Image 1: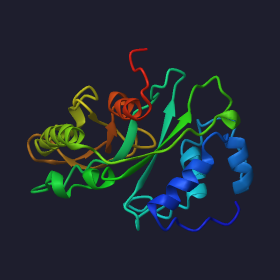
Image 2: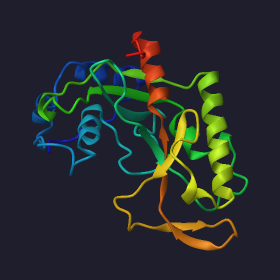
Image 3: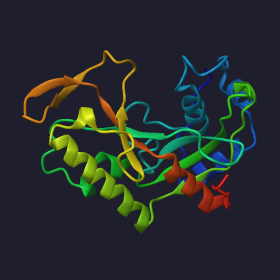
Image 4: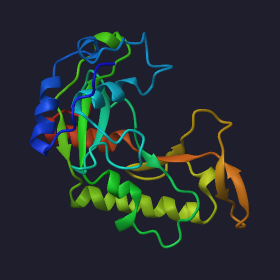
Amino acid sequence: MNPHPSPPQSEDQLLARAADLCGQNFAQLAHIAGISVPADLRRDKGWVGQLLEWHLGASAGSRPEPDFPHLGIELKTLPMGYQGQPLETTFVCVAPLTGITNVTWQQCHLRHKLARVLWLPIEGERDIPLAQRRVGPAILWSPNAQEEAQLKADWEELMESIALGESQHISASRGEVLQLRPKAAHGQVKTRAFDSEGNAIQAQPKGFYLKKSFTGAIIARHFSVDQSN
């Protein structure tokens, strides 16, 4: 891989870099970065995000902070379908299963991660070869009052269930805009949690994900995409 571009020094510089990516495909971007394009993403799920992070100068890596910590901006790629609809839910952060007493929405990690997000739509239809998929126009977004209220309500409901020892029984259908799902490389990965009796157990790690209807509404509002298709 070629030397990493320096982190952007302002929102305007970040948006300018994102604008430069718009319309380019992954083969072009990988060539500039000095890396090869995998045949598919089955064994390289994080490849697209890492490629775009490289081009934009993201510096957080795997640390639990926004991708552009000095700007307070998180980068999220959003695979899109032909009709302008998100094809996947969006992972936000790992859900805490212990040590959650007195944690409030105002101070939670999820709210911090979603305070300022650079959405980068990408072509995601599987019949498009990975190398030929293109990057779309970026959106710099912060939740409006309604979106924050929706996120807060779901987060509080899901966290209450976790506190009651129900984390392993929460369905992904729970929540209007936010869902709780397993987050691990495979089913053998375990973490500490509590059951409904307060006993410590080994359980599957969980993550918070934004539902497609929520991210689809963000895209629709910015690009007037018809979500009825």
